[in-house]
Length: 145
Image (cartoon, rainbow, N blue to C red; front, side):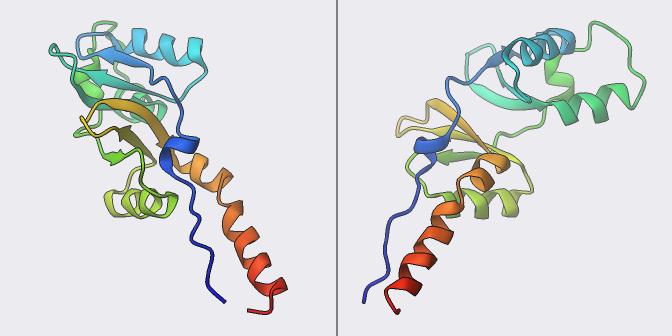
């Protein structure tokens, strides 16, 4: 008996469209986008519209609030995490999980062949969709493998 080779791909579960901001946006504007879209991160683009970093709720807490920074003019570029960690949209969940562990991040930006930003995948997306591994094991066990 041969093992099933089906694996979930990043593009199947990634969030899209990706909410983005500019390097010059204030952290407060970025936080407002997070609130409005009910998301935990915003990808930051530079003046050439290229994704260069990401701001997460954790970044805001650790790099601004925990340091008691109250300046409304703090720019996204001042607290964003960079460089972005990217993965091809046709990569598998296993590859995405391995990259997250290796790079010590909880979110990956999914890109297409032309390196355009097409989605974002999080650690919780992977956990939520990992049931297929359990289902595959059940199939194998019931088939007497």
